[in-house]
Length: 160
Image (tube, rainbow, N blue to C red; front, side, top):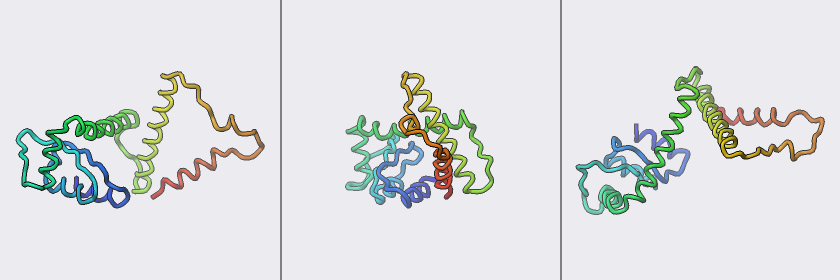
């Protein structure tokens, strides 16, 4: 799964960092990310050795062993992503009910949008932040609601 996922990501994004768990540790995976211009942050196993001189494996071996704190800062960003996935699955379930690819993607994107809104609201309540709505700053007119237009354009952009 590693190679196809990274290659598909590279089609649309610049790959700079790829944190992954030890199951994906291989010279091929390290080289793939390196060839795409990024750095793979995959922790080494206890029996890992330095590898061939000058290889990407050797460079990562020494970086991992000599700069463990720096490595950990990059690697542990993976924990944030996994926590987010776990929260979305717990709140909105892990099933997708749509039947077409476009509808499934949109459904998943909407789950993450709703999750982000829940986090904003929870932070607002927890930190005692008073919300400031754009409509309060705009003069009131008899024009149709702008929110409907915004939502329509947003959902049109979701379709792939």
